[in-house]
Image (cartoon, rainbow, N blue to C red; front, side, top):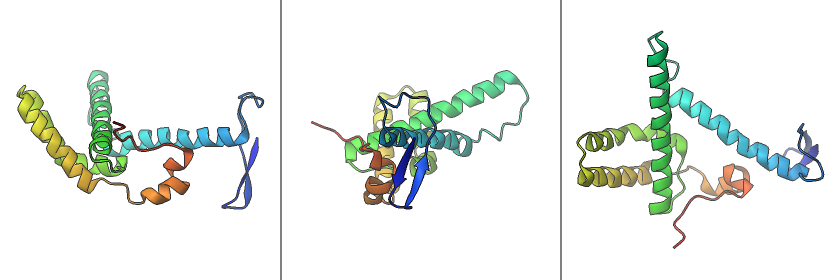
Length: 159
């Protein structure tokens, strides 16, 4: 499959086993761009969860640390999407990952104390902090050539 990239003025060639009658080149190209988000997720896990820094050779401990890293990454993504819904600002998952260490300890402390009111306060402080510090740098550009160019939209409250 080939499609024309007007920006680079070159053809882009894609190999796929999808049926050509059902998936045109533009659709396959968009799906490939979405796949890049998966690669970014893996990069986030490796870079911001210190998956390379385990100092043990015990498989059970390594597995536990990997699962803990996945949970923390999911919490960071949850916080990023919560900011988008509550404050209606496009957030950067990378900036959220970098800023989250400022707010996650208070959330964990509230969870450990089984304190719903403290958890609510910690959560609201966290998303307020992230709304101010984890916004996407170029949301307008993203709609033209970034991850939002595929038609994805930030998750905002609809009602």
